[in-house]
Amino acid sequence: MPFNDLLGAGSISGSGMTAERLRMEVIANNIANANSTRSANGGPFRRQDVVFAEVLGDAGGLADLRGVRAVELVEDPSPLNRVYQPGHPDADAEGFVLLPNVQLPIEMVNLLTAARAYEANLRAAQTFRQMQEQALALLRG
Image (cartoon, rainbow, N blue to C red; front, side, top):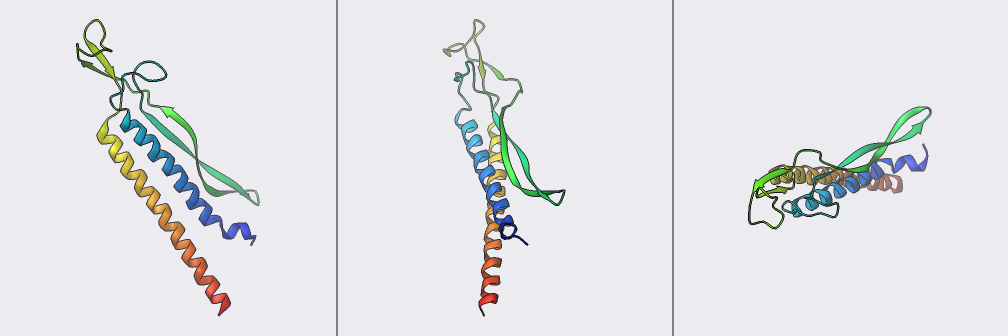
C-alpha cells in the first residue's frame, strides 16, 4: 500500500471541513444580506448556495473517492419578496420594494447542518489521528 493511501482518510475529512467552512461563510453572507435591497449586480441581493462535487482518484481502473470540493457558487432563482413600503428609497411607483429571497429560518437550519457536518469531519479526522498514533505505538513497543 502506498504511503499516500495511508493519509487518504485524513485528506477526505480535510476536504469535507474545507467545503463545509465555505458553505458556512456563504450562509453567513446570506444572513448578513437578508434585507439588502441593493447589490453589486443591481437590484436586491439574491440568496447564494454552494454546489459540491466528489473528488475521484483512480484505483486500477475503478473510481476511488478522494474527498469533496466546492465547484460552484450559484444564485437561488426563487422569486424575490415584494413588500409594500412606500417610504423606502428603493420603492417603485406603486410603493413596493423587492427584498432578497433569503428566509432566515431556512438559513439558520442550513447553518446548523453545515456546522454539524464540519464537526463530523473533524471527529473523523481526530479518530483517524488517534488510530495512527496507536499503530505507531504498537510498532515501537
